[in-house]
Image (cartoon, rainbow, N blue to C red; front, side, top):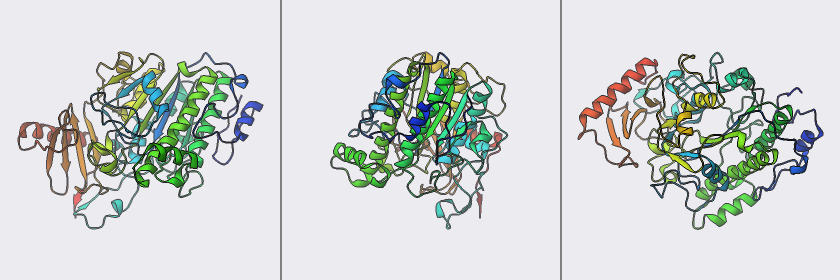
Length: 474
């Protein structure tokens, strides 16, 4: 059976009336997704013995505390207290949550590129979302670097490596790593090189695309089960923050749960709820097809929510190198991962490409030069304990641009619980101990100058090693 690329404007499926029926089915109810689109269990094909399969769900600006999953058992405020996200809670209860997981960047394009390639934004020079005045800034003291905006097509990606290993691969949803088609990076099926506006390039692609990418993803899954072929599927959600971005029933449900909140906060919650509803549809499909236990499902976000208002107890948010901008939820379930586990091992989305390859039995080891991430498999299969082997121990967020942070262009270096922040306009160094100061309020740079100098030198060494671009004086 041949699988043709799926586009957003039509489903190019063939081979079975089941799949055609799925494509034409009315969208499922958003509040009570009791069954996957396209029919019940009696019409689903038998489960395949191949696998394991991998599904990656990428949220847009979902902060560490955006969901009802408590990300750190020791911190009661590390969750959304009012909104309920049972789909995400299911992944946490069946698998593992990472309390100290980071986006590679506080902006979407760099984080996505780092995930696809296992290389940092600094190395890729993909450090911002576009070319021009950063965030409209025209008064800053620095000339900021011109970022690369197209992910290189000559680098191996998670999709190209899995495809070479015999996997069917698909990406539906927000692409936003350049103008080259996803097929150039190993994807068999996709919506094309979309940006924030979706396939139709509209102001508000949701809620149409929230359910559209899920429907296309389930169709893709069904076809691979029929073909008895393992698959990799990525569903990348578009941003949403208002009533226009969700279905009326979803808005009403969020409003009822988030009593006393203004519409702006409810809007962000409703968008999280909508993503959770589509996740539950996906989970129902996996259950119906009998492949839930042979499929890894992982959920993460490209960066935190915008503004510190929505990321407490973390500081700041999207577009900043503070914890609210880069500490994000990461949940994973699947074969060999203990249920209900939590780990405090530090990791980032740069680790996910080598992790996925290792989980499916195709570890990359040291065979690919330039990979900065390391496999989390040992941590995942050992109850959340263990170490991660990476070519370098550094975790750096390099953001040499003006955006939503008053301090301007900055970089950070994380070593254990210590976090150094370097700001380039004034040359200031800040040092925080996140084990006692998650909100980054108590600057230790003056009281611990030795650690400050050590991490500052390590940051310099790292940026030099990857040939990172730096801001310069005007």
